[in-house]
Image 1: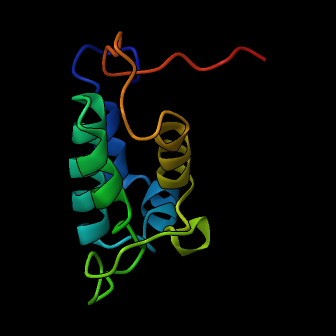
Image 2 (image 1 turned 180 degrees about the vertical axis):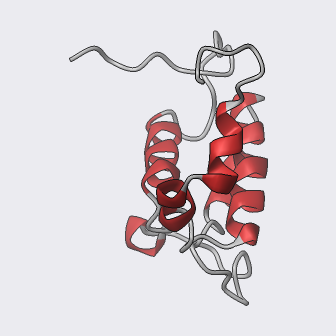
Length: 108
């Protein structure tokens, strides 16, 4: 099935029981906010990405984005969100001059 030309991995997110259950705790708003934040990250708009990532909570918070987040303890708990924030913070939320929209992960 996976080797067929018309196979789309993203379709599994709609019908695979494990994937549906795994993503169940996330709200649609979470996915919308994270997607917008990631597009800003790719485009090198890291301050905009940071601000949007700060609002990426599993369940929407009515005051998300209304208060300045100053400590890592206040960050959302989602792993990919935290990793992007830590990476950008390392560069003081300014992409490196040679930024191509992605970073290479270190080899282990």
